[in-house]
Image (tube, rainbow, N blue to C red):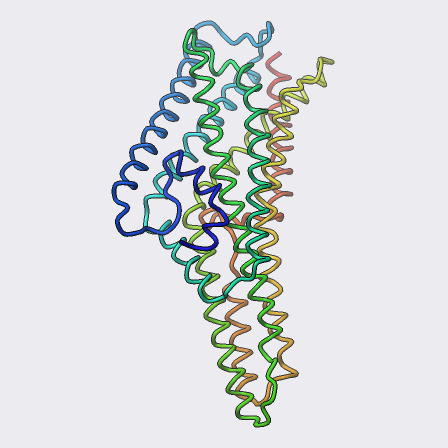
Length: 383
């Protein structure tokens, strides 16, 4: 078993409960994999059935009787806003759950864990690395617990699960579905944190490349440095491949989630602005949802941003080797490695549509304000 896997075992065991395969494939675990497949399939069917039924029931009820929310008849823009938010929530829960379930069955998921195994064997991480991994998991579970408790109160008050005598069951299943997708986001954040720590370790190795003692020959010095540089380059290549595997496994999940956050920003901001304009009491539930989405967005951006910052340090650290290189050939090799590092530029992306980092934040804010203004104009004309 991976030492990293041992330190992440609470998270991997938690996701196993929901039917997701964690860790590299092992011989003689076919029966275990079958049980995971059955459990995961039942969870997916439950999520798809519950949320699609809820949305269809709400759509038919609203179409037949109109929408009355908290005893108030809503305008066309408000009705459209409520419907979009319900569809948005349904899409993100179903989309993330189904996508990651099928991803966990692919060869890319196995390759990701195999890449972790190879990197761990090559880099020989120190105990501090594993303590940071454990700390990340503990913080993640704390956030997960707070989110589950808060969402339980939200779901009780939500009209999404107004299904008569089946409402208690619908509320329970909806919270299970919500917990699953938040666990997937937690796994993404933990893996991004692990990769950031890997690049930190790789960057620390650069400072030790030219620590060559008790060697008087220039040729011997160059040969030792070239050998260490080649080993470092292989480790860096493996780390870049690990980032590519994360992008392949989580790219679509990131795209679905960021679209969901953007749409939620638009819908909740519009309702808050409408309440302020009509001198109504500010909707505390919508403000709470807005804050939760903002926190989720920050958590999604934070580790990819740190990863990109850490990879940006690599090329500058390599250039510092120049004063210590022994000959022209070694300098040329260092320059070649620097160019390879700059060209690689590993980063977290949403299936290559855009990079997941802080540069996306101004775009989200600007687009949200634009669409809120458009909805506000439509609502004003429909009164």
